[in-house]
Each structure stands twice: as structure tokens, then as C-alpha cells.
Amino acid sequence: MEPKKKTKVCSRCGQRKPVSEFCRQTAAKDGLAYWCKACIKAYNKAHRTEITAQKKAYYRTPIGRAVNKRAGKKYRKSKRGHLKGVLRDAKNRCYNPNDSGYPQYGERGIKICKRWLNKKAGFDNFFSDMSSSYTKGLWIDRINVNGNYKPSNCRWVTREISDNNTQKTIERVKLAKQGLKRCSRCKKILPVAGFNKCKTTKSKLASSCKTCMRKYQQQRKTKKKKNKKK
Ligand SMILES: [Zn+2]
Ligand SMILES: [Zn+2]
Picture 1 (cartoon, rainbow, N blue to C red):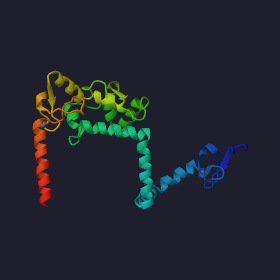
Picture 2 (picture 1 turned 120 degrees about the vertical axis):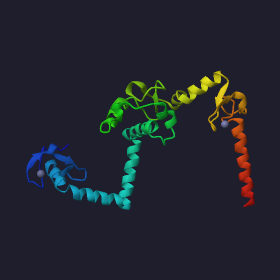
Picture 3 (picture 1 turned 45 degrees about the vertical axis):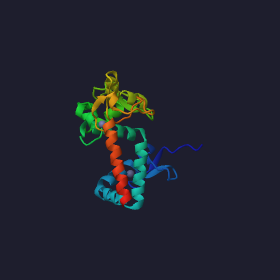
Picture 4 (picture 1 turned 30 degrees about the vertical axis):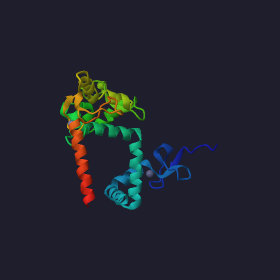
């Protein structure tokens, strides 16, 4: 093998510098950029507004948009990108009243610890606390379901464990012991007798109560009639 060059002359400032002072550039013959790092830095600093404008314009072109989209897709698939989504979703559940999970989280006073909520370093903290134990396909879970999102109360689990640990399941078990069940439609807690039997569900009962089922079936009938008239 050819011995690697130890120094290189920068084509901008003309100075001979150690190769560590040059960025890698696979397209170049020697695998190094033509300009030294200091020259590139100085150039970028002097032309900052121009460069950002160029980048912005590029990302507005069809090719640029496609490149950007692909990069975003790749990032979201990466561990860092995925965990960013996990933290964002948790934040929404806890602090965004419009989020579908808010009644189960924010409304019940579930919070995210300050360390993870910090605007500047929050995600980096979350990543350094939780990324080493994460593997693909796992869900974030709070060990104590009434506790907050914080390092000591969070772990990664499979979907099944996560589901079993949710507030809903805990409530369902509690109610079942008293012969009660919550209707998934009207959200009322009713005696088990208020539900039709169903073979396919775990509890062997329909998920919505008899009253809701009746209403639903009536609605369907009237819709069908309307459609026929048309
Ligand atoms: Zn230079
Ligand atoms: Zn109901």
C-alpha cells in the first residue's frame, strides 16, 4: 500500500498543512478537500447569508424537496429520529389538550420531568438517559402508571406489556371485579348485564353498551334508507 500523505498544500491560502487540517472528500483523488478547514470556515462565515439563501432555494426545487424528504425519512428511521418522535408524542399527551391521549395523561396530571422538558437540552438529556436501553420495536412505558415521565419511572417494553400496563386495563380489571364495565362509546360505567355477549373479545362482552348498539344500528338503518332514496 502507498504511504498516505502527511501534509497537503491548501489551494486557497497556499499553506502546507497536516492532512488533519483538511476535510475528507471522497470524490477527490487523495480523498481530501482542496481547501483547508480554516479556509472553508472563513469562506462560509463571510458568505453565510448567501449560502443559506442558496440552500433555501435548493430545497424549494423539486429535486431539493425530494432530497430533503428522503433525508427526513432516513432521520425518522434512525434511533435518534425515532426517539425524538417518542418524546414529542409524550409531550403532546401530557400538555396538548387537543391530543387524543390527553384525557389519559395531561388531564390526570401526568407530567414530563424538567430534565427532558428543557427547551435546549431536553431531547439530548432524554436521548442519553433512554437510548442505550432502547431497541427497535419497543414502546416507552411508565412503571408506575400514575407517575410522571422521568428516568426512574420509564422503561422500554414490548407493545403487549405496555398495553397491559395502561390505565385503561387497570380500570377494566377493577371494574370487572365489581361486575361493571365502561362503554367504549358513551363512556358510562354500567353493569355487565347492560352489554351484549360477544365471542371475539377477551371479556366475551361487546365493547359498547346495549343502548349505544341500538342507537348505532338505528343510525345505520336510516342511512341506508337515505341512500336508497337517492
Ligand atoms: Zn487554506
Ligand atoms: Zn354506551
